[in-house]
Length: 170
Image 1 (cartoon, rainbow, N blue to C red):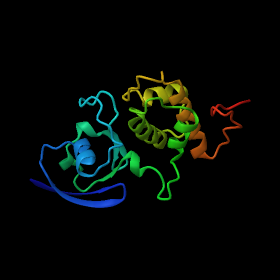
Image 2 (image 1 turned 30 degrees about the vertical axis):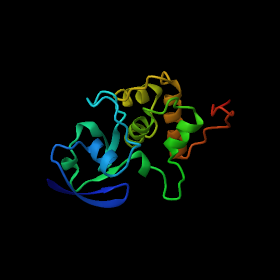
Image 3 (image 1 turned 90 degrees about the horizontal axis):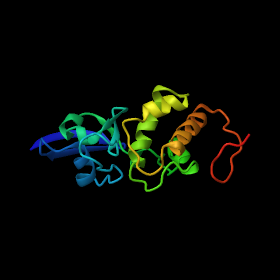
Image 4 (image 1 turned 180 degrees about the vertical axis):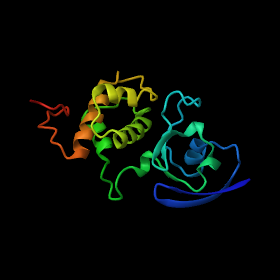
């Protein structure tokens, strides 16, 4: 057993774990953070994306011992303490950027990191920034719209009036 100390979603955690335990297993099985989804177990789909010290990582490709001393943010820790959704979460909801929801936590975590690096991405930049995260339901159109809408909200730019479907109307 190996002792690790880390902060997960703002809570300090100390635990004894098997050195070969993956971060995704630790988050889900030991801490109950089931919003971090196990998709492919090969780092190909991105469903397990979390933030490790502020940068997105595929948690199925990181050993929990590698997170020792780090800060991890999962989809459960993204919203404000009062339950207010993060602007990216809100935009995914408003723009219908999800269908089955399986890829959504990882997609949102990757989008947050993308917007931190590029606060005003073009459609092409969004598609490139999310290319390591797979969605088998939406065809990405609404996901791209959601990320661009969140970018506008986070920068304080007006996104204009919306229809009930979250579309910006001219």
